[in-house]
Image (cartoon, rainbow, N blue to C red; front, top):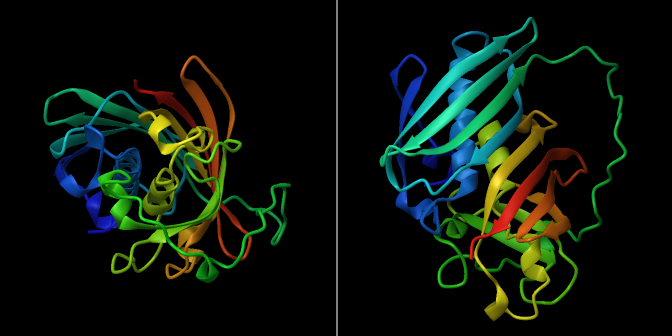
Length: 273
């Protein structure tokens, strides 16, 4: 089961979906945050398709209040505003225990007319060796969370327990046998959350690593993901800007192998204990 079908939803009523949170996608006491984000994106896409399928997902801002248990969950979607070219959707996710686990706002919109080939940004893809020349490392039990088994991690810099600066660099893709036919908004916005927190790099040994959790997740989708080759991993970079009293602010980016910025993500990640 890959990230795409692991976040599949079933419609039960207008604006309401059921979701069976799979056991193989857990992190700690509940579902991995990237899976939650993927499900929220899909819920907004389903609702948007019924109104105007030409409006693509552009942004998600999600808050994760607590653990989402495996098993049955309910996803509710509400249109907060329908503009002439952009829609704003609210997505609320309740676990089988009845608790509100997460709430998100998803922005969808049509393509805007701009000069063909124009670039407004100054961000540049970091220098990396080709992904095929970088070996994979296991990120699954007993060395990592269960969801890590679904991805292929190819780290270049930023190994947990190395005592270095809080930065990570590498390639990430699907595990062997779990590749999807095409990248989607749900898969690229979810997979940016898969890498370990860059804070883990700063400690002097793996014994010093403490559990952490994302409580705020905001991500911008900057290209049409269907234009990305699904057979190729994405380049990943992250860094911690600062931390205070157990709360960190971390920036993450995904790039295509030809240097296009796919996703820019900002997270508030906290120490659990």
